[in-house]
Length: 395
Ligand code: PA5
Image (cartoon, rainbow, N blue to C red):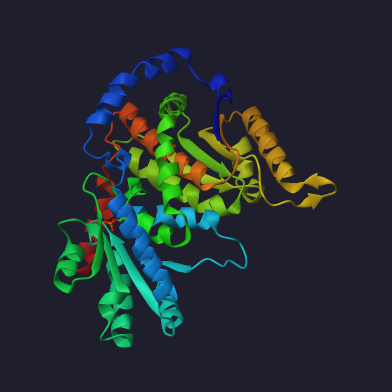
């Protein structure tokens, strides 16, 4: 179950007329959304694809020591964020998955090659364009290692997830005959959680049906997602230009990275948008907490609370998780008193259904918010600018 409180610590900051005007734009926004060609992520995926993903995941698990997933941005954050939330902090017994391709650090890649030298590993290279620099470089280095280790069986160690028809990776698949999956044309990177880009790595350790079911259950949160977009927009009008996502579980730290990409890339255009950032509590209360409480009043916060935890830790007769949430409630009151609006999203448990529904909710919110700002929430022309500079510099 997911509950939303966009009132208690928010209402006094919102202009009533502003709120009503934006709420009245719902039909217009939904119309744009429903007519967009980039909402493939709202469509159900086929049983055939689910079976292919399950069978491939099973064979990876049975045939290899570990899977190396190569991808960045929207081809990385969804499955990494999810996986991080559902693994144990220590003594994790799940199948090993290594995420690579997010850095050009030679120290990192050199150490990874050394680590993989004696492992029987499989590569899943993920890139919609098939030409992203970090992905391409990492893939080349690790493929060279595979070629040295398995000159005769290279094909069985490589799985490619990319565009159906175009790009260098699709050309390579066509030439070499690697096993491959498609990222549909009507789904952009940051909205691609429900594609093989994320579902294949996740199908190895998690119940794929539960992930898919939970994700589509997020559809029921459309009204709340629209209201969330409206509230954010009202707060922007009150010069609240930064949204801080606050989590109270360390393993949710990459969930907020996923959120940062989703909102940053969807909204940050035409000199507009709300800058998304995040804090992990209580750790960051001892650092950024000072700024939020007393610094420049450009911030509002969205707290993600998890009501129940399966892990019981006694502290002088009190349950530690209850204390963690008591701190969350106190922090919201304190920050509110410091002129910081605080929105709250409450999950009764951190389970697959809640998390995947929440992802769907946030994707709807990002799309609606973009339309309220009058920008296209599905493109990211700004990301290309640095890529072009790098290409020029590398010539
Ligand atoms: O959201 C996006 O489109 C980007 O963040 C991309 O996902 C990222 O740049 C990686 O692109 P690709 O999947 O083409 O390698």
